[in-house]
Amino acid sequence: MATSSITKNFVISGKEQVEMFINAIEESAKNRPVRTPVAVKFIKGEEELRELMRFREMKEKEKMNADK
Image 1 (cartoon, rainbow, N blue to C red):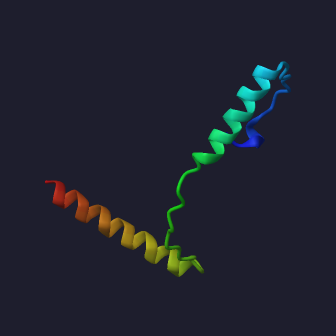
Image 2: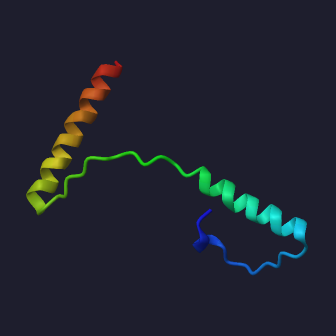
Image 3: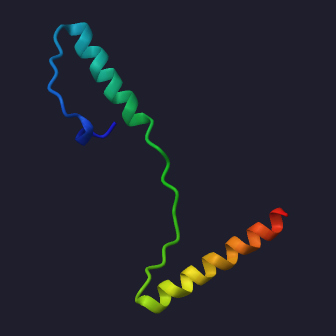
């Protein structure tokens, strides 16, 4: 859980509750998702955007024809 999503104040009292809370934080730090590298191309201008949309439409048509 991201810390920015904590919107309430809460009180942790007692040694057992404090230990449970710290253990939960430590476990969550161990279970971080693996980052997957992604290739990115920035679109510069209207013509590149139009080309991307034409490519997308072409691939969608190919997919629809393959499903038949």
